[in-house]
Image 1 (cartoon, helix red, strand yellow):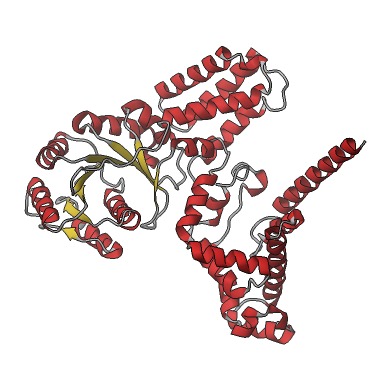
Image 2 (image 1 turned 45 degrees about the horizontal axis):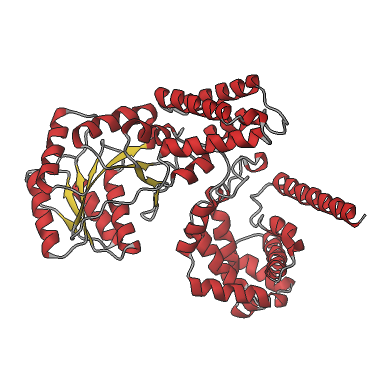
Length: 479
């Protein structure tokens, strides 16, 4: 996943500061040198790195951080704030026309993911804004580009306007816009042609389309995996088209993340969306502050909450809460939860949004196979309705039948039933205010056996250590 290497390097760079009552100028210089190297290694633009490091050093010295309380924490805070500032301070919404339709023009090099992103954006507007978008197929050069957009449109239920490959792209854009006005579409998304590299012919065509339709938004789609090349690409398009925003794609791949940290600082144009996944719903608003937290390994709880809210129905969540409280949560409910979790994306990505998890060494190589969830579902599907609602009836012969029906070993069936009971117990205790069940929760999250025993032991030790500390404090107070 993006930023993994950078996160680790930045964490290591600031490790030397932790726990120090005082931080010397020498400590600060060494830390900033490590941060500089980490950013350069992550393909962040050299000028951006130089300015970033200079700014952090000036703020640390200017605020007399080194002489203050918790200097290491204050430096981390400064780094976090400067990362946020470098990426643009806050999320920037799409420009919107005063009267429909709002015209969005997509631009970018070939292979950056323009067509897929156009579809993802159309779906986002349709589901979140209840809009009626129209896609315009304006790439007449790439083989099967029109077919690809048509397939995307059919998949998400959004109409596609096209006039084939023998019509001038400027004419297609104009006719498409007329069609949108006649049909009262709220948004028009124009999927333009790309090239393997920037050339005069491409830029002239894009300029002519811009002149003809006067778009409210020109979004440059950039492949995060291009690293250092992302900056000159962004500069080239911006110089000609005066883009209004950037969409970074493939940010879920094993990229170094330099593009996200460079583009805003170099072009002064905001990153508006990021693509982190192959599903059509995998397009998220870019929040610089949340991304900075993720880069520093501090998690991204707000995005996790939003992800959860997107997938969960409020009424369903309330009913589930009541069931947990009354201890009537059964395997049917558990089946629903597994399906909801699967919709949210890969489990290892969800774990990394939780503060402290991204840099937890015990979870570094966690690999939660999607098949594990399917195996759990197969076991539940092999139960009768009575067995799902009343797990107490699951005697050995029933378990053997379930194992045979699901094609899983009977030991796995036994383990799942046992862990379900523990989880149900813990959830009931926690929902009724008894937090002593929290340790069991950490054990029960190992369903499928993919969270390592080392991780569980580490969390357990931390829990016990904190408990001992609380007991000592309470004893002192009583004295």
